[in-house]
Image: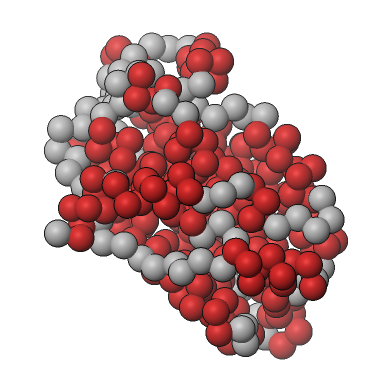
Length: 293
């Protein structure tokens, strides 16, 4: 615990919500040209996952009274603000895609229902309430590990630009990815502060990894089937394999190869590497600069 605390003190970073302004009016259905299924994999990131982020923000708000470290409390508050901005920005993208004919609503509603039933507070009290809070924090800390890893991938690879991805959507996911990197330690530090059990942390990781992979595949399959565009093709597994091989989307193996690193005793999210790429991108993001003005 002392080692993690020291890393927290060294890595603490001011977390603040940013005003952003996106213009999605010219975004086509397949905003990665020639890559319908890869487009829908990216859609999962910004149409489905925000429901989990909403539950995560609620969980952190519930944990806030148990956090007596003032700096961590400020970071938690900033984290919640950033997640709220993510939700509103992705809602605009969702509305635009629905206008193009993509029936997103049922999937998002199903995800919201599932998240509430599985990750809600369930109206518990006393010791049961505290134990369930710790379990949720452990699950969310593991989820944030993967969003940080994917966020770093979005910031450091150029395949999406080479493919001609629409700049507004590219900015959306890179801005979101950069903030995931920026606040990568917050949920982990909150979990370590409130509970810190290694067994619970390991259990959370082993549950989260396959669950996230399944969520990506099932959700992308749904969106692909609902895609009304005739040119989307019929056999998405080939598109999935090709996009993975070309580096257009992150490899599904990430959900397994990251487990050993996360479960290493003494692990802290700061070990994922410097956040310079994230800070630089947030300073030059077109949406963030438009929001400032």
